Length: 80
Length: 227
Image (tube, rainbow over all chains, first blue to last red; front, side):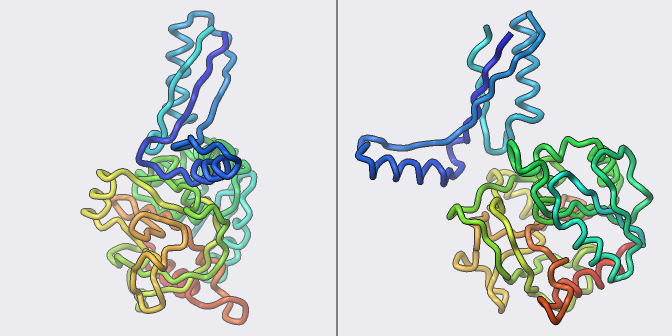
């Protein structure tokens, strides 16, 4: 079973890379952009076949390693 | 006094630290990260470098390596644990000290001498150092200290700020902040003050002819204060 996770920076955490990307986009003519926030994406293949169990396990992974909850939020977006 | 320096894959200040500790009288042992138990030590040092190539987040992979459970137990039983630079990043990832270290505000790797003000001398790391300001070296890409407002309040209430970036007179102002750290924080303690994490490298300032001597002040003092 494949599960995907998106890690994003919390709202009040400064994202200088996102800011620079925003500026670059603006320079390229994408002038409607209001903000860019950079994050991380993981695809995790697990032997677990029970979607609920697999999701719970990935949630543990997020809390213990994949995300740092002081600055990041995680979202498990896909179980298939 | 016995010390142990942990080497992770990608550590690169471990031998500098070994040289510094021995120079000031420590009997130091190098410990590979896959060891399970620490040798008998009075001080454990997590050195600078780029453990695990800074994958995922700086220090995050190293914080889960085998030896770290012993380091955490040692710290929790009152043992002195010091993390320098990447070692500080590893410490925040273990949760032994609060907060995180983000990418430098202006996205530059910073490598230069800075001045730091000693904020608290009621601990074994800085007790009896006469100077209030030290000149030390920093070299990092992720040294921008960040924590939640609640954590900041707790850190300030418990006097856990160890050192702040400042000018040569000890003035702590935004213009002397190299990386965007909250409140110019360069180093912090845990609540009990037996664990210290800091970005500057005292081990790089121990040769007057090459660098400076403020690191020597730090180590001379350290070995005298360890019980």
